[in-house]
Image 1 (cartoon, rainbow, N blue to C red):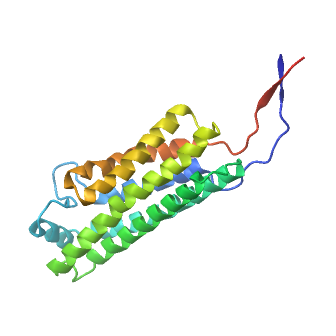
Image 2: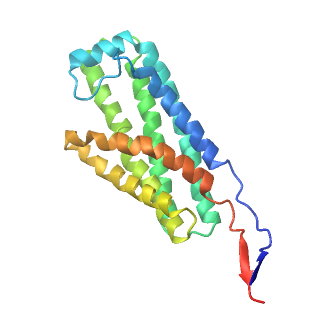
Length: 233
């Protein structure tokens, strides 16, 4: 038996999803870097902290919050582009199942919630707002909802929606499919944080491994179905 190369078939045209995923990852983490501390200094307050801890941070570090908000909004754009490109590529490769549509819904919802979180942070850092403790606290929890569960649950749908049809058509390696399915399940379970505060850890458990999955899937998902095929002599 020998192999011959299949005739060259057209490739999917569009932005390279792997590169777009890297841009999204860099922008998001650059924004996060503005409001975290590696030395125990002032850092973005957690939802378990009191108003006395939350308000002073936004009063004293408004510039860092504004930069974070800008980069958070900026990261939402490549995430939306990544979602549209990956869904378009799956359709191009012949996927007719509901998975890509589910991924499109999840990815766009994640991007919109990220942009909304950026806007909320910008409002919180606006002069005069941080001095209104009651208003600030309401905005803080709204931003935490859109940027927490509002991120992880639809992100889980995006990853699962891309993983399952890719597994059915063998477009992604098994390890990446299993990884994606696990992230999808964790993302959906993170909704429990709304009623069980101890489930908070599921949100970063979706977010940070998700960067790796999106980049890997963006580089591995083929742009065409070209490949060698065996023939009998």
